[in-house]
Amino acid sequence: MGSVHKYSKGWFLKKLRAHGILVHPQFKSHLGLLKESELRNLYYRYVEVETVESDQK
Image (tube, rainbow, N blue to C red):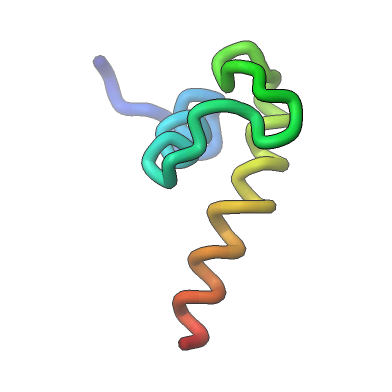
C-alpha cells in the first residue's frame, strides 16, 4: 500500500481505527461507507479532542 495522503479519506479511516472507532458512534455504520467530510467530522470530534485533553493534563 502506498503512502496515504494526510487528510484523505484513507488517512481519517486509519486514525479513527487507531483510536478504536470502527463504526460510526451514532449510526453504527461501517466507516468505509461514509464520505470524507463525515470522517473528518468524526476525527475532529473524537480524535482531536482526546489529543488536546491529554496534552492539557
